[in-house]
Amino acid sequence: MKRVAATVVLALAVAGGGCGSKNAETTTSTGASCDPQSFLPVLQAELDNDAGKLHIATAEVRRCRSGYAQVAAVPDNAACKPGVEYCYDTVQVFLRKTDSEWHVINVGTGITCENEQDPEFRRACRALGYPG
Image (cartoon, rainbow, N blue to C red; front, top):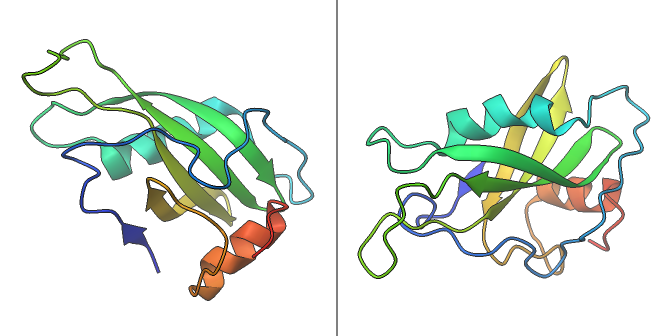
């Protein structure tokens, strides 16, 4: 199950939420690649919009282990006109590795692992070392 915040295309807020970490933890027991470049195509497919106004330029890995990852999707703000339109902030994305591909399980702003009801997201939180 994937939940996508309604504001993803309109206005993304700063990543980190209640459970972000500035230092990436990149240990993995499943052999899943935690290289930021392995996440970029997945993030672009999920978040880039058809109008071409939102384009994810880079991925910043916050945590990655046990087949799960928390990644910041950083947009290209070259077209940003502050106060006018098309300015996007970084959004946090939680992913799960299945077979040979990463899949988005949660994306949005202000995501926390506390009191989460979705079982898949709770598993991701625990695997990444957050209480959940």
